[in-house]
Length: 121
Image (cartoon, rainbow, N blue to C red; front, side):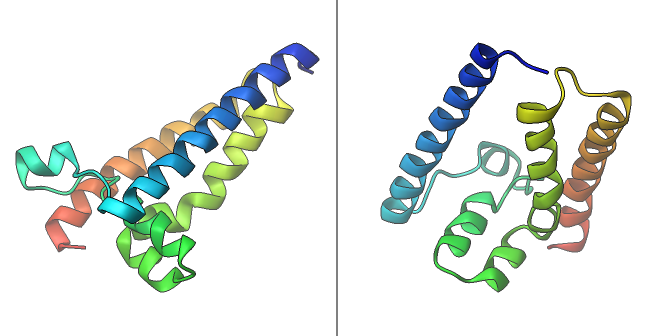
């Protein structure tokens, strides 16, 4: 189990991340977000392209548009939330199962990036 000080530091970092996310959401709502540097350089969509549109669609209450912005990340968000919860509140270090799950997830994310450019999703 983690010490209270460690947990407080992690919660502080999470709060800072949430505040940064809220600031970026406000910026994106006003100016349309930032362009993807990978897409700008290559013309290809990275595995994360569409994340801003996904979150803004969710903020507007449009889950269908959020899904089509980035289907892989939309569907895998519950897994990422569980992984974050386990990291912040449960384990001091992720167990072997979670390390394998994280590696499989990263491999699937890379395959998604390739697939979306071949199929045009």
